[in-house]
Image (cartoon, rainbow, N blue to C red):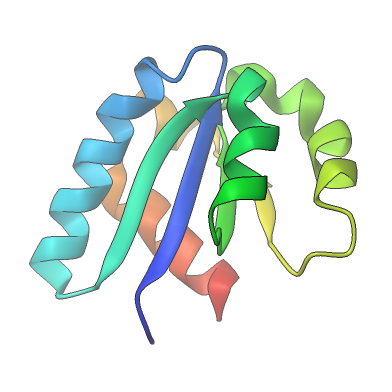
Amino acid sequence: MSKKTIMLCCVAGMSTSLLVNKMKKAADAAGIEVNIFATSVSGFDEEINSKKIDCVLLGPQVSYMENELRDKLGNQDIPLRVISMADYGMMNGQKVLKEAVELMQ
């Protein structure tokens, strides 16, 4: 798999940054080349329009915006999924990374 980019979105991009760091450590340990970053939902449009994003993961606190954000992706072939509350709460970077990689295959 070539280097992919995973974008995580939450209300402000702050709490999700902690999960990003855990995911990066899991990727390094597994030898997976991936770019992972967090943004706020208010930055969603700018990020989607300025970068090549391969996967979008939403924090559970913005799950109510899933359909709206999916609509913004239009016909782009970018998978989008809400991170489970349990994995987010436990900051399970390894499991969230695994799910993102599966989404991109």
